[in-house]
Image (cartoon, rainbow, N blue to C red; front, side, top):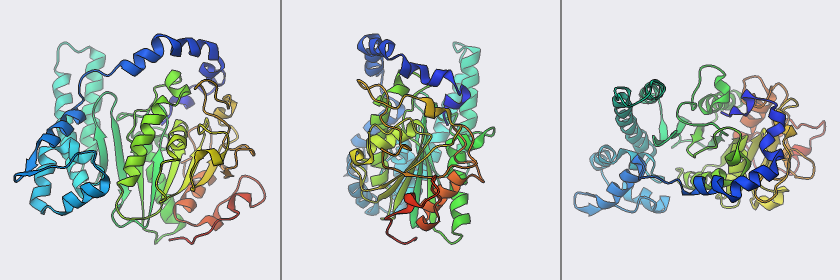
Length: 402
């Protein structure tokens, strides 16, 4: 989700146009406050610390941030009972551990969500909390309860602050192709899923893409991840105009992809500020990431595709009435995100977004943008529709659909 769409004009992102003001903010208290506001240990950090001090039947546990392959071997060496004991004892740690078995992560996160729900239930009774604070606690409690349902496959969860979350649709262990939706600003546990304007939220985006992939290729064995497991900027401000949040998000995105099971190709679908995250991550992402598609992008922190340092195909889409096109496409002193990805000089494969409306309509069923995303996700590159009348966006693509 992105709150950009709630105020479509805002004089084309006034924060970027007022560069002088932002420079002052970054040079003084604004930058310092954001960089140094660390606070105490989060529940996830506490869980990881407990994990690293723990053991299973007298056997020391590996570092929680060890390479995914090493963690995978560790869990494979345990029996089912031992794995379940670890999930019950360290649910937040196991639920967010790249390299842990997928089903075990779902199990651990269901436990962690239950614990977080009880914390919010207690907060609702806290007399020190304002009525607004109690209302937010109730909303979080209800959201955690919904995400605990047996059919939900929560792949990552952190209740700290506004919260982070990721959910899988499909069978990730058996998928022949994996798609990852990376959303933009104002994404948190409360905006992770919506009933109103549901296709502007990560869950709605991912569900729509998963369905569209199976419509494009009914026998496709795909999985789609709604990945909101980074701390996104809040609103239109300094964080949204810089790469600070994207840099930390890129590290998390890279780690997640490296921890995915199997060797299936991965496609990233990066919306709005999410495209900044993907642009920063591009250079370090593993080779299994074959495609990066951006929609409604303010830039990818590069002036041309070659500067991204990736062998992945770069696709870009923008609807004709998306207000993001009025954002100044430049980068000066860390402000702004570089060239327009749909511009000819950038070098991306420009997709048709016919039918999409505004800044958050790219995953709406029936749009050519969603149809194109599905065809990329199933490897059906020959069916992709380009923004131009020629077939330029499909040129020089090798590899068959899987």
